Image 1: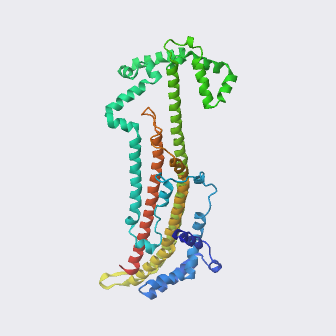
Image 2: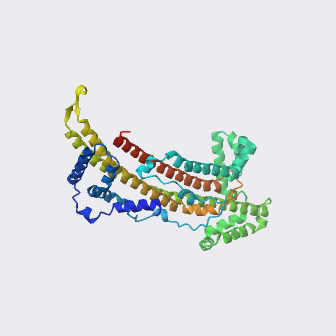
Image 3: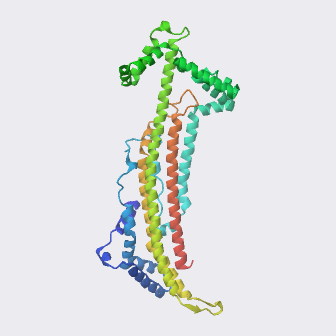
Length: 460
């Protein structure tokens, strides 16, 4: 059985109390009486060691208390969610060599070391930093690939900032409304009042001749608009057409009554412009679809993160509750320790009794609080990682067949598909980084618990 399976099995077993344990009195008074007895044992042993650890783990009364303390939190952590938004997509991808494959990379995130003695011997940086650096390397490679395929970046490298400004001006001049006002260069030279007057004139011209909006005064297109406005049946038939049928219908109107067209009207040029507009529209739609995919993925990741956050909140509350119970017992016992004469040091609490109480509390924290806490956090982390794998599955399926650099628009200033895909992948890398750092932080806490326990119980 794999280590994580052992972990889950161990934690589940903690939530199932035996009949014998269930019959025991686990009221607060009984719990404190058990701890009183354990304190007496510590006082007798003088120097606790491995036998003390073994005895606490085999004590049926302490085990019953442990099971009772863990019962409610285990029920919460292992309760199945009514809805699992992160599972809206089931992966069907068959990975190919050389493709970016996010799922095994996420699965490779090292798990937290939850067993305290093992955590105490773990070099935390050595265990987790190689994975974190690997993700950072993947992020760098992604940025380099996007830059390599970006037309905007290519233009900048060849023509510099001045080249980009000139191209931006030229691209703006292609806008019909900008053309109607004399071009971008002319607009920039106008005063505010002149720009306002030009805008009003442009609006008046377009109202009188809507064909100006198409950058081509085409009576055929005007006729099509008029037919749609006056003939509701035709509008309904047009709306039911496929994209190819709509395009053919538009071309039919563009070619009718050629004698009525402007003398400068060029049918071939008009068709080329139409094809270009359709291509740009399709590219924009493709970019939009990728944006929506990223949003779906992030919503799923968000749902998985919310569940994990709720788990962490529940565990933190459990920790606080158990700690408060142990602190309450400790404070009562400490208050009862008598003050004794310490010679030249004056008067103070009996140091032997204080030491025995301190060691007892260290064992209680170690066995009833810190060890179980790290198990709970590790199980919650594993569930979070698994849920995140479901959450990013749709993105992972999509990028398997994605061709970098194949969807670039002629307009270098429009959003690019590559950038949107990279945004989704980058978010997945950031998620992996976060998951790894969560595991690293949890392991550091476990290591700290172990070192603290060793210091108190051995004096080293």
